[in-house]
Image 1: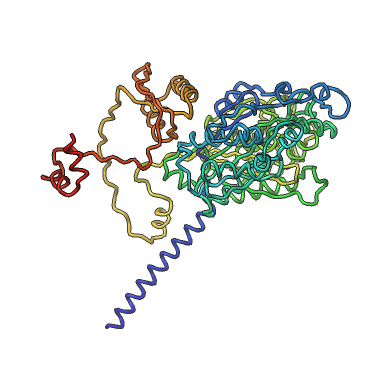
Image 2 (image 1 turned 120 degrees about the vertical axis):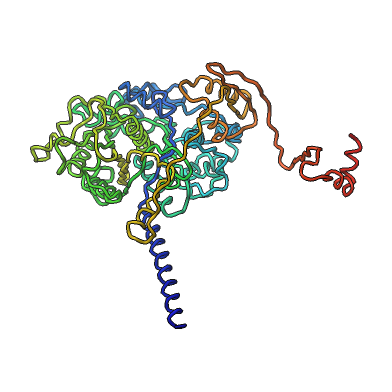
Length: 606
């Protein structure tokens, strides 16, 4: 009998150990494929776009953001408009305000700011905004394993600095290095996860997101900033592409159009805040959309170093679908690379038709579009711009139209040899509601670099918020396998107390300076249609509390400032206050008086 008991105990231990091992293996396997949640976004894009809301307004209006060359960058417009060397085939492009920068906000001196690549400046501003829009106070991330993955296509500012007479006094090594694009963010915000600057040209921002997703799933970081930036500090790209005959005469990308005559150069920045889906739910962050899968590959030894390669594009789409565990028919739309060139667009279209257009329900064709028709080709920021567009489209349930594509390109065999295929892939020449489905909406986003590096990302509609007490997937899986005891029937939901909404709500605002505080107050008081309580909660819990502060009281339609001041650093200055009534125990004050002469002297003095 004693041996039998030992055997039973051993078998119990082994069974429990096997169960725990299975659980760990299941969790490890699940982590490798866990969807990545997008919880914050920010951008600066052509057409005066300073937020995702601005971008959606531009898309909804069916406008583009293309304008004349800037006059504040020292460009020789006479040479650009001429016909000799250094001239441009177009006098228009897509530009952002790259000069305005609040250097003091980030603790940067004016002299260092001058030596800093404008791409660094834009990344600092948009990263701060993206985090705040995610409900995360940037200062709260100091010392955390937050990663930074930033795409670039070079540092054009080097040429501007070398041709100027500014004395940068040693700041050039940090101001003009591509590696500092990511490193500056980690240093400024105190982030201790991986920091990578990625240069695969036009596919840089999608490759950055792909790397961020892998780092999150592997546990290298718990949160990540991912995106891309391009600022054209000199007109070199216009002159260079003019020589190659690749620029559109009016500076606009006519993606997949029969009128396509070249690409249109633009600039911009787009930043996403991403984390594992389970972390986003646990942290209570709003999920804007989900990255279901992604893939990156290379053209290799194809038909030319700079020429796009259709089979490689098709393969990267198939790899992304496999990564997401989806079939082509599970994806409703694709935000294409769509640069508007007579070479690239037909190759991409044929790859899309081959990868997504086969064996689809004729009633649910793949819907194809490109935000480059609105913004131009924002280069290293192009993938991020496409991602932000499609996240907004998923949230609004509307697919914006592609401009300048009234007649699809005759260089594309839209039927691909199959009669039904012409109806199975449509160009979005008009905005339309997202097709209804009995599953989440999904979209693919493509970016192909001139370097030959291709990327494709599968986005999915944000999941519904979990109800309180809802089982997580692991618990459900375990119950299905019979590994756990059946759970008791759920208890009836308790009656909720009535919600009491205060008539007056305090709003806490702050800034690095009095001017910044005034700007914050103006911005906050101009908001309409928001819950005063929700706004007050967000201002108190998800914003950095800077030195210059004010308290506003919101009551009805009126907002009144009731306090303003400068908050000094009180580190190490702790005060202790006693009630004076012996509230903790009788005689507490008498004991302090008897044991501590300093306390006794202070009490005698008052």
